[in-house]
Length: 103
Image (tube, rainbow, N blue to C red; front, side):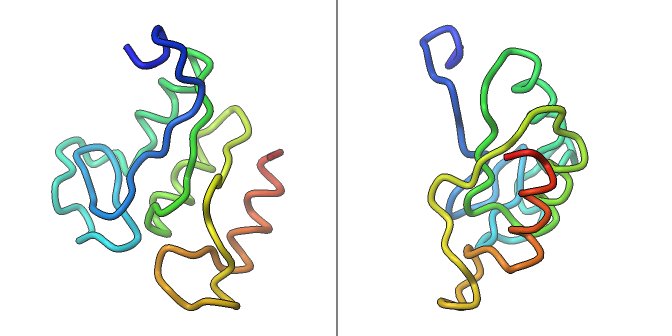
């Protein structure tokens, strides 16, 4: 529905975990019904031409998405953990993994 409306990118989660992905600040698996850690939705978004935004997702969701994605993903509003050590910020190894994904 969002893609048909012209939305070209979407974050999988923000402050809390939801039924398709875990948030970096939410309880792991708290509301997720399908156990996909974002991978099922990532595959669907790749297929329909939406860009997956991994800002604020949990570390597990981040790596699960990178493993499944056939397209580059983005981190549209993430900061560096080394400069500000809050859970939603990306660690150095995450930046390296993102670069290898082609983003």
